[in-house]
Length: 557
Image 1 (spheres, one colour):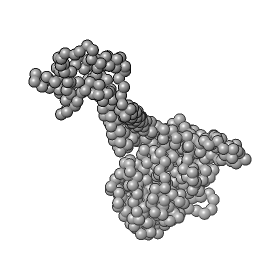
Image 2 (cartoon, one colour):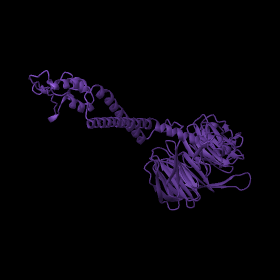
Image 3 (cartoon, rainbow, N blue to C red):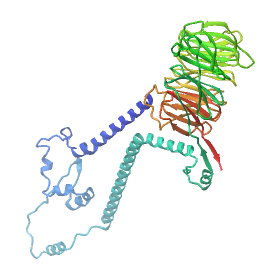
Image 4 (cartoon, rainbow, N blue to C red):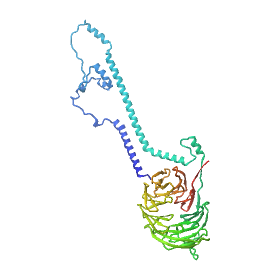
């Protein structure tokens, strides 16, 4: 979907072009072909006003069609004058007299009549100079008119090319640059020998995605236990344990709460899950919290003090933070045995706080602080040592859609659906700065050592400098058509050089140093969520299947 400013600009350009074209057609066909309109016709004069015209000689029409440079010669030959803006023809005066036939003047006149009329040398010189100057003026006038028409034509052609083709040419040029950078085996546009040799020595190593397939129903949540183990839970309540290196399903978790009644129908649906080594903590729809030992493949504890469903669960240290559907947060102290097999010694209730008026959308932890974000436009900071409210962050005018924690600078970044990104200090809760995404909708956030990454609803990848908040780059994916503003999108940062974005079924790897696309993969199904796996892999949750995709490796031979 195009921005409103771009749509108005293109509409204005097309309107100007249409008006200019109509004006040109009017001048070329209407005015030129039908120049004698009734309002342009001259008035018919009275008979007295037309008397000078009636006294013209019969061949006046022929003279009027001749060029203006003949008039001087005509005046000289016919004794014409031009006083007062009109032309008067003087007829010859005939005198009657008696002439002696023997008069010598009579014979000299007849002989001289046979000779051609000779003009004085000075008059001939003036006539030739006048003719040459007139022809010079005519030639320069023709050149001037031709140049003016050529300039006008070039302006029209340039305007049409700019209005119709400039955006398309610019998009094509950017696409070629991105393709040249993304494909290391492609030739350089300049085609120099050095660049050709470098491109021939580069090769890209790509791996096939690993598929985790075994659930019958859509997956609700996943969690990474270790670099080689993965836990997933579907909407049916089945919990599976996977090998991350091979994609093999190791076993299904036995969720038997009551030994006397091990019926699967009595097992509630799991809404969230978090892990710590071989311990998995599951939040259920009936308000209970299950603790499972993945090594023993069984439940080792159940905490059930409320019937409100658990939407987020977080394990940090020895504490378990539970966020419920009504916006409340509970803090639990989980004590496990140190010897094998692992058992739950105690699960002690510490504190419960009504944190938000609406459901909680995000729950994260940073060293000694827990961060919660809600649809009520606020964020809350809680101290893990005292389990009390530390700060309330209120600056958004819409539901909080993304939260990102920078552990290096101890800062917090949050984004709302109104296009506002806020930077907070976790220690003091102070608002440091605000950033404008310039678009409404859900914006995803991620952090690297240098940049704050944002993925806008239009599909633009935005890079902000974390120190001053200036926009370092804004990259638009011209090859992807975003048909819906509610398309499923995600953003993660694998390391300081590579970021991954997803839109619907397309997965894109970005090189943050060169601001270019490294690789694009179409998984064939909508990507619901993305999770970081190490510094070179990403997990994609797609309906009832999970894909592990490794970032491509550029190798220089």
